[in-house]
Length: 196
Image 1 (tube, rainbow, N blue to C red):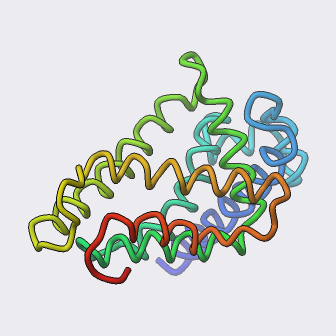
Image 2: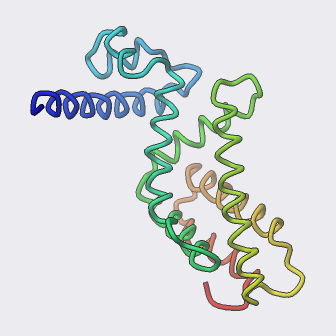
Image 3: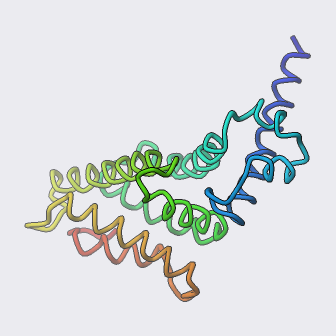
């Protein structure tokens, strides 16, 4: 039994090493330019050995983004209405320390706007999930009387996501003075009757 647990731990560690290597290669080459053999070389494995852990380049990309998304989900877990929106601001604050990860996300998200891109469906699902959660938070705020009169929760959610994504892109483009968390907070505050 102890041997099985040891093998599982070793395999889990190896998967994390592969994801670190995939992150490096995707950051350098984008998804389209990256190859499985390049990722295998980066981690010091054979290509068949790597494919034992992840059956495709897309599976590695999705796992890299799942790690990214899990930290956001941890922040948002159990939050509703205003607290959910505060969680979004906190995610923007933490993203300031993850420039390489945000750059990778932005590059792949741009590539994946092409309908035939292998990650297109992944990004569609992600944006729908983020939009749905943000819209639900604004709707709950509205039910609690915390949303300004006449504000449409869906429009508020769409513009909040657009501002957050746009601030990230500008920050990556060299506008280092941008405070992404403050920008997101200021934008969402305009819809609310209480301090965010």
